[in-house]
Image 1 (cartoon, rainbow over the protein chains, first blue to last red):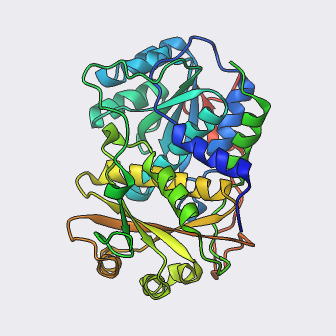
Image 2 (image 1 turned 90 degrees about the vertical axis):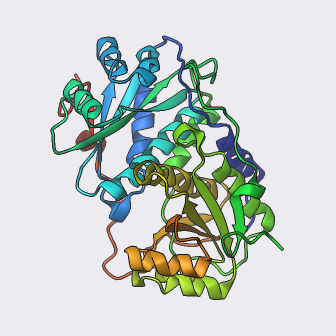
Length: 184
Length: 184
């Protein structure tokens, strides 16, 4: 089976998805938000448990409060919208993996829709508790992160001391058949 | 900003990505595997640490050995290729999330390339140790899962007692502004 040229082109589009931390003030339409929620909804999960709940936040004041939970996520105050991820809290290890899966879908979906997304972690247990309070999340659930969304102009990281972009070369990342063995 | 029609169409394509567990025997070309590895390589990660290494497995005997690590992943024996994920092992919680992110990219990439992918977890610590032995992975690293890849004809789950497909409706999954509050 060979992929169509358009399929290959779209697949390569994935390599352009970045983390965005600066947004234009334009609000996102309900239609765009619904398209993104559908994308999140169809994410696969361990035994199809769908161990998540999504809180759409567009209220500026609430976003500002969330941005103050931890200094490093101050940038979310500029986002016109965010989808806060609430995990069931029953199985931390597999739910963390599933949270990564749904986050990746949202970032890819935002990119394909001409928007930008950024994942923001609340921080330690106290900071998570503060975020849960702002979002009215019951104590038994897990809330670690949200995905900020908006129209974008730059992927520059506005934070001082931000990590460098780019990626390691494949030669450093890939083995063949067994760890440490290179391709023949 | 509004997305192009083609962008919206591609974004909706994400909703068709499924977990595949049955593959045609056709081998994947090196070019397709490289395209998928590039997609994995560009995945975002916590502080851009890229806490992963990828082992491409195409040897039938090795895939058969891996398929015997746990009964529920017997289906990987039919895959012509798999990318085993090796995580650095320094930060279990954030690496589990990053592992989910890279898995999701590979599943989406496979779909866009006209292939199918399936994530398979080795199981408990003993089973992970067995998989690490088969793949020559050093003890200090984490190896929990691989992504099987191949040409596909059906997304039917061949396992007895398999979880049902489909997803919960958005009304059940989404709140507005705070947990439990519905849209106005």
